[in-house]
Length: 304
Length: 248
Figure (spheres, each protein chain N blue to C red):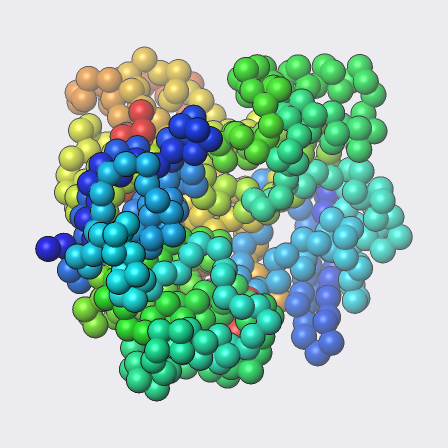
């Protein structure tokens, strides 16, 4: 049986007015690194709170590590580690005190599972006497992860662990997750950063409480229905405007150095005509090339 | 973009005891420019931004913001800038219209000008139906677009944006940059921080802070060339990994 199973989970707020989680079903295999990818307000946190038995769904069923989220919630709580999106440790306790507290609550010691947290803990150990509230963002994140791991959970829930974190620290965090996965821990992680999707084994793209697609990142990219091109010129903001108003263009989005475009009819002649049009509009140094989509391209495509 | 300088700093420094959060930072930003202010967590971005907004007194060094001195004319600075962040920008318990009225009032806009701008803003954002709704009930993407429009309502010379697009969906994130481009075209200088490296590419120029110092500055193309990296993520990662202080 997969470690996490959701069947038609529905969660509404404001007397049904807001559907935060709308008929969501998916499963996370034993030992899998699974990503919930979507913007703020997509329903990610509600799903995490339901699975960690902190919130009851309106309808639908779910199990974690084989236990029912409603009837067997106490068993689940012993088996899971949860790092909420908002820093939720005791600010007035020191680093070491926080970790000790969580170990004691789960009837274990730091020593017993030290091998699991060692890699992460050594980075914050120099500050072990500092109060958690006085730690920097990156350090808080590492302490929270240690506290979620100290009882050697079977399933780890990480709600937006990298939000607001710079790109270098984000890369380091994902390296840590890979090592935890090797220890056999099932990981469900959420992120609003689309570039992190490719670091997961499978992902669910979620928007407005609904899952738009579930698959490996590679398969989701393969399913992109159009031919995608990248284009640039000497005047990128004007190019964006001109592309949007060009009759051959179906979609056009800024993607850093290039704009990504698809054509109305997916035909070769259109790209030649487009370049002619752009020359007439006084664009210089035009580069147009066929590219593979990113997860962000797929997400945008599914949103429309 | 003109060559009129709207932000000029000279060895601007902020110390907290032994800790030098911002260490002799010197740069200029031109009128109408989109200036990306990058750095890893703890590199000193927030400290520098607070000084530039007139909210924190430097330990040493000089700066003028929109022509005003950073020590003696902070009130003038505040009147001539706009500010928005991901965390706080609008009052959630006030409606869209109430927020606009409030911030317009704070910046001393005339009733007539405020009414004109307000109608204009609501129409541009297509928020006629939401005008009387509480801001707290709006989706994040709408909030952020509204917050930006409110931050430039009084036509400031410079607008400071602190991670304005964090957590926003990919389509809204791009619509947000349309607003930034439009403001820049109208002559407002954009000073923006972001963790999205694709957004760094949209800036005219970028500075990258490491351990309190500005390590690199230039257009995205120049920086990629200088450091021999294919994209801004490569440049940023290369520089940020050189940090020695265990930051934020």
